[in-house]
Image 1 (cartoon, rainbow, N blue to C red):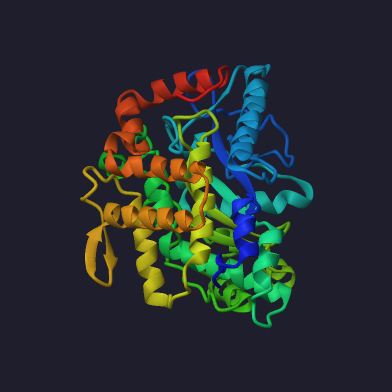
Image 2: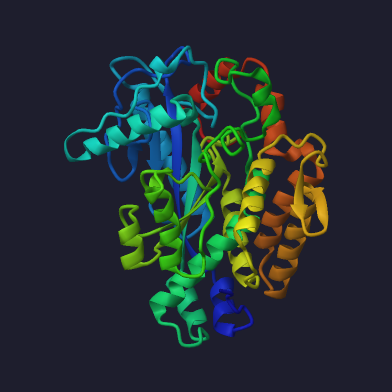
Length: 430
């Protein structure tokens, strides 16, 4: 489903900033004064803002939907400081939020206590115990940022007038399905531009060479992927949900939450397939972002802004065939984008024309985005965001992976603890 930006009403929404809402979820580990995983019970309570993820010492910070990248980043930073203040004042001793996607030093899985939920939520602990048996606890220590995006209704209503007889609900679902398909094909670019975890403590990986291979270990082959490559039917919401049900019936996964794929279509409220099928898509979730240690919030507002621009650009592209074989190749592109690209030429991707460097295709997409927004007569902020991303490709010293490796490649855990202490007290990015 393509949005027609030649329609004045659609274009006006874009130029007026009526594009969508952004929510962020940041996973982060708690560490003690020695830089070890905290062994205390979760001290922040469970609310709409703070909860736990896989383990008891893994905090998840959740922001409400924001109208802009600046607001989303500011909210996440505000909640980060609120959590940090609470952890500094614990009677059991000070704790800190670990500022990386990769964990600090660990001596064994006994340091990874599964999150304890009780009463009607007890099933959450049972589910995590199942994940620990199937995937191992260590993999669950990877932390990332999930970005949730929902289109502005005024934008979709403007585009809906040209929908050709679909109901509003059908149209809305088709827009999200089309976006999910395009993100599955091109979303590797987000991984490539935002990967920020090229170093890890030697105690984490069984093979020391593993850490050196990746700019983002959690997004690479060692990270959050199932034991199979999932493929989807994007032609309808029923087809999409049936794709996921197929894996549950085949006992490859036990729930939609176990589908470790970079893109998810989600309903409002609990992530259940019956909710999705009955109520339609509420938002799309992007799961390929590292926690960036170069900023206290874990993500730069420029990257949030880029993702929003990227989403809107993708909605302008024509729908193309995306069969099972193409989806499997696309999943490999995500994993390739997580490799450490030493010279911008060492990591390649498969195209109809043969193997080409990822960097080459990344530059082509950014140039195409610049042309698209120039045609919309977008303001200078768009150019600045695109230039910010392009600079990571034209000068490797600007890439997050290079900067993080240079700064934290030696004494990772000690330097990480010092950074965690700093980010618990001071404002601003480095």
